Image (tube, one colour):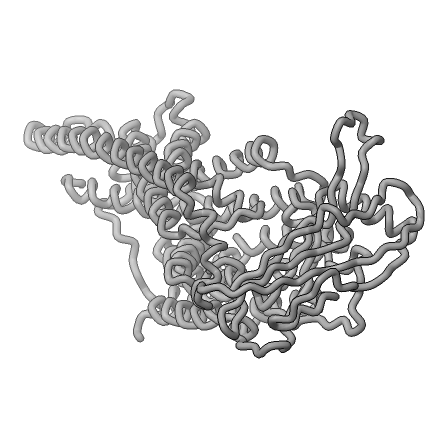
Length: 592
């Protein structure tokens, strides 16, 4: 393949598909009566703090005789999964009634540990034949009590598991905690107890292939679908109104401009020019900080490519519910493989802008997004280590990520940069640039960068904000999101609105004889990322019950990185749309 971009894109799709579409071997097992079925305990944590999770046996539960850790893929570790063998034995079609897990004497410290966990609404998560099991570890009795010191704390001693099977395969598993079998942990004293479990088996007609469907049904309920479609219709109306408004106003204004400029040329060549034609000698003057601008464009193009690939994988069904870590694996692998796109785009554009130091530009491109992400990760990983949470990455995983960066990302970035430097492409400018820049006239305050960014970001954000709630509830909560087709439509609408609003604001900027549009178009396009971050503040305080330093720092830290990524990606879209528009209008008139 002559085009290095095509080669890189092909590699990214090929490898990402192969990495993410690997289903666990355990989920395809067939069993005979009495065969052991794998049951792994995963993690515990406060229900309202999804990032704050701990190992299952950090709480003093019954520990099995032979504690065995399950080997996990990169994505599972990044997801905070730490699977270990559970203390329960659930052999295939082997029913048990009030079987004893263990008899245990809880010390004062262990009682206090359990009580603190119950107070924070701790839940546990397990996997039985790769099917998720959720449950709360205890309950707080607040009935008729107003003073928190009068609350009673109870630990569930008896877990009841109902397993559905079809012939020789496990189809569904659900868990219930016995409300009659409670252990009072209100007082600080040693307690003797017995942990029990009951297993019931029942046959079902549901096929093995459809066993994951129940987990995606929650987001496909009619009530939720109505809201999703309302979101789509709301976004489409916004797009149609905006597109219609711009198409009529902008095209009419442009038509009048073209007619006026044509008449001016016929009437008198020496007549003073006004409007956007007046600055034709400055409009293609290269921007300040062109190395940073080219790097931002390269990073934005890479992130846009990454998003498109993630959507492709989502639409072909890779990210089915509880495919542990598939999304994280895909993000790491595709980001590494698309770094060549960032290198190629940044360096070729930098060379088009007559930049000389392309090596420094390449280094800047490599660090522009990864730098802030790495610093955020270092801080948050330190916080997770202090908390002893499962979000703290093991040393081995960090080494793997560093190796991916060293052996895949960096070489591809350099290869892309060399290909970009050797592309010898020239910047296509329909008009010649004058030697000295024209002075920009004094403009009203609302034509400055910040008010323009506020206007540019509001419309694209209004087109996506309804869908944002569902995404946040999935990423920062326990809701399952599976309607990727609707999300893809919303993403397309976001791109269209961003492009159109940036083009409109760029036109009005040029009409006011302000020729410094390069950075402005990028900032206006990317400003939606700032609106999304503002929505984070609203979501945290009004729509979620998250609390504590760790959860708060994880939420705002990683959302800052995601919003920064959106800023770079949508800024690139805004600039590309504006550049296409400006080239088109200046080709349509006669420039000296």
